[in-house]
Image (cartoon, rainbow, N blue to C red; front, side):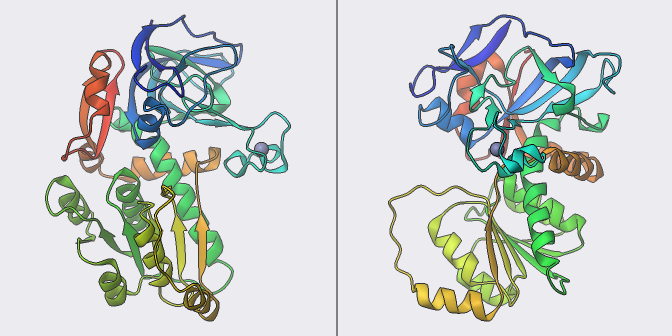
Length: 350
Ligand SMILES: [Zn+2]
């Protein structure tokens, strides 16, 4: 069968190759792949900057934003043939650490976790794939065209869980949230914010293309001006930072209202220096009881939350997040950025 594979650490090796049919264990589902979403991590792996092949293999099958239909399921698995499913990306480390032992593998302490399509496990960008039933999530059938948004939505659901758990340490009725970055993570963060009845603001730099309208159609406010100006005016109770741009990260941390919670979800490049006053920043965080928290990946609970959030969303709006669908054979086109892109997906059967 065909799969999108690459040799990790070697740029220019991304290719559609012939790979063996998946090995289906006794408690595994066999799934017909529908599509995978392509994200920044996939591009980093394709550029040779990231990623690890399974032990004993030269090539890694890419794809961690999965969507497929069950082709074969064990009788007691809770899944039926034809179910729409997404596969969970991360698996606990083999030790396991305390967090992994408690199902919190998104919080793994020793870094020895594995990840489908990223770290030592083949991904989902193949015509068929197998997944342990316990690491498969069933999706509402209305998500048949957009279910590859599950993985980023799970990451966002975790970010919101962080907000709610941190907020719960004292009285907490957040009124205003600022999301920085209107990519798929930022837009899904805005969606989950509107589902919580909060006044939502999204900041990005573009002034045209689909992003401003996607924000507007959520009933949220789109901003493209200076971040300090925006935080000064709206004084957000919560910031979900989804760019990793150092200037925005600093401004987000400093611009919240008292008892502000900033969740950092974007990974920054290093080496860029900004002039800042750490004393002033410390003063702001202490005197306002602010929290800045990093959040990455997602566990089974967050996938379940994401499945609910997507099922409750307008499928038409979600469909506009998947701005391009590209046949597997044209993968290079999916990995080349276009201005109008939000999320690009690869069709695995085309
Ligand atoms: Zn662990």
